[in-house]
Amino acid sequence: MAAPPIEPVDGAYLTPRGRRIAADAVSWVATRSGGPGGQHANTSDTAVTVSIEVARTGLPEVVRARIAGALGEVVTASSARSRSQWRNRQLAWQTAMDRLDEAAMPPAPPRARTRPSRGAREERLRDKRVVGERKRGRQRPATDD
Image (tube, rainbow, N blue to C red; front, side, top):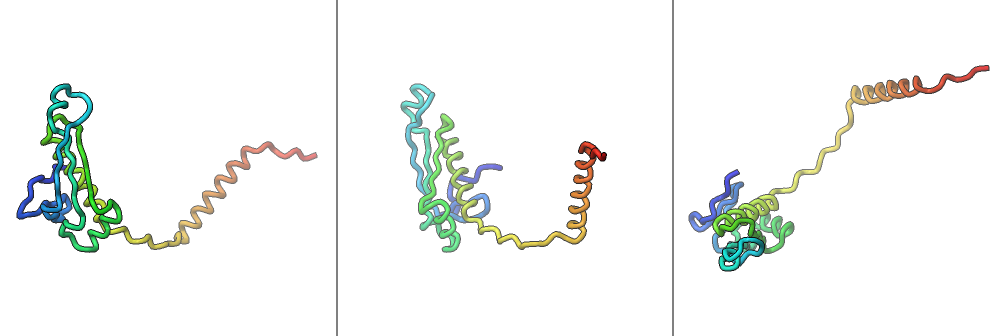
């Protein structure tokens, strides 16, 4: 799936599932990344962290409560996988949006209990008899004196 746009449109960001996040709820921080890269990694702020304050997102109260319960009051995502800050921004943003959308989903309704049909019960018992007969056929014959 393509990464969602990182730039706000009309003062809001859109998640992949179409939820609008207020632009003032999102903050970005670029820091120096660790690991390989030599002088480039030592002098460039390529690691990116995105933070989203749930209370300021502008989402409905029910959705905000669901997200805060699952992820906390601030949703953060970081990336330092790439040597490019632009790519790390995309990766961090995609991770944050995926977490946000997943946490905002309503819980699945409880499963309605069902009973096996009469035919299914009969088939299960028939299969049990077949297996039992097969196992009895493997036994040593009884020694009758």
